[in-house]
Image (cartoon, rainbow, N blue to C red; front, side, top):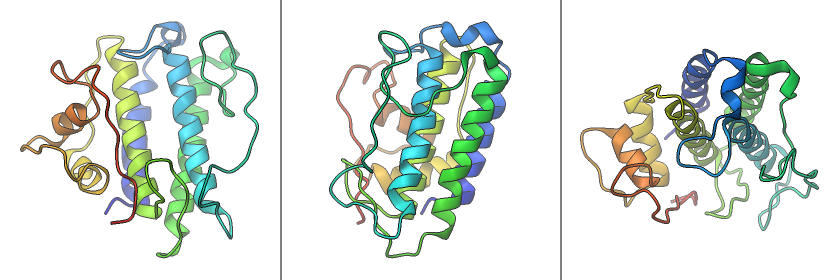
Length: 203
């Protein structure tokens, strides 16, 4: 099952790749998405932060996300999210915010007791499920951002294999876990545009 250490490893690798982007790169449309690269990075921060909050409380909600009011979008077309990097800080600010929010989720996953459960619309989940979701978000959105700039990216196959086991148990599998994840998430030539969803419930 995916762990906090796995999440930290994938997040660190993704951040190392993203840190090489120049400041103007974040205004480029993300590959295959309706958002630009800055929006996509902010969405990833929001994922990390919200996943952490879903599991952090003494009695996490089981029927909805923690009730917080999203502020208005940063610009027209941007997602409605709580976490938004200061555009004036460029790449360094984005990486710092991603690092911090990834750390929040890692910390919560690391200390959550085995019976702890938190809400997600794809299934009430446990620590390994939220670790797997964080890994998936980090790896896929790093891919979306880097592909927009013609930069190749592939997350650790061993870790991705455990994510597929946890979130995509019915996905077609080959000897290439990364390609299997891209296929399962609608990011290959033959699957792009197809609806997809993971199963975060505790099996």
